[in-house]
Amino acid sequence: MNLFEQKRCKAMAEEIAQKVFINHELFNAFCQVPREIFSPLKAHAYRLDALPLANSQWISSPLTVAKMTMALDFKDADSVLEVGCGSGYQAAILSRVIRRVFTIERIEKLAKSASETFRTLGFSNINVRFDDGQFGWPNYAPYDRILFSAYATSIPEILLDQLADGGILVAPIFHNEKQYITKITKNGLKLKKEILDECLFVPILDGKE
Image (cartoon, rainbow, N blue to C red):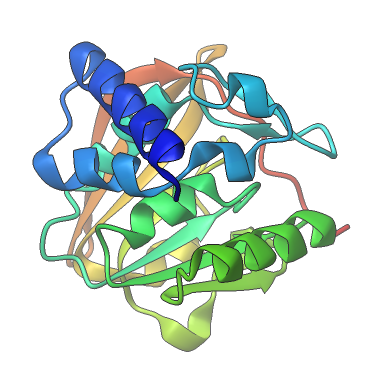
């Protein structure tokens, strides 16, 4: 990043920190990832707004990215699976705080674009798969953390099976006509569910395109 980008990233991180709690590690992550490279709307890239992408997709608001990432309790997590890569911004943030990131995108154009962006940034710890994310990525399971970047009405059992014991899954879940950031902690056969905050995501869809 050039000096101008660094200043814009830091200013955005400071603005996020004024509105929601983020720890030092996540603050630094926001400072290390230039949001404008993930957004077609460069002039608005550092506003705390969701921004449109191709194929009726969106790049989440940095505030939502902050809330979702903090809900993962990422300290000591070695691997994370993301369902719904989109532009790749959330995965890039995750890659600065978790050693191994596996992200799945059902829209081929977005998967390829995200992969190219990660290469441009030199973020070599992110693995991208073009597939229906509802089936997960069994090859590298179990994952310490799983994060949905699209809303679901329920969590597929196959994904809960890919979550490590003691692991945390964070997803926007549709309930009573609204979406809520929901944190699920797995302890053996028991699942502890916490509803954290209202949110707004595009829905998870079946298949690939």
